View 1: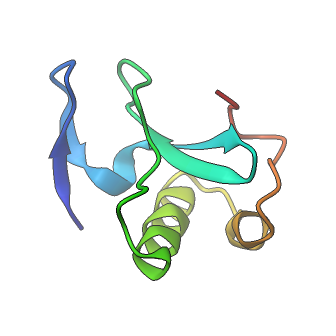
View 2: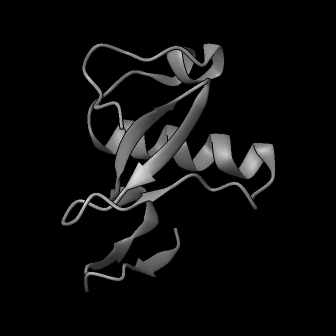
Length: 79
């Protein structure tokens, strides 16, 4: 688990950010304080998928199959 800080001052584990469907088949993690979206574009696909799945698990969302299909689930915010 990676620790991260946001420009707004929030500090926590990367997976504690909010899972966000960013549109056009893209997922990312939003800061829980300010909403800043990190699309994890520089990460490998495997690392990205693992981190997004862990973020979903921590939120109690069973979205792993939804994430793999790249469709926006009803319970997640769209930005």
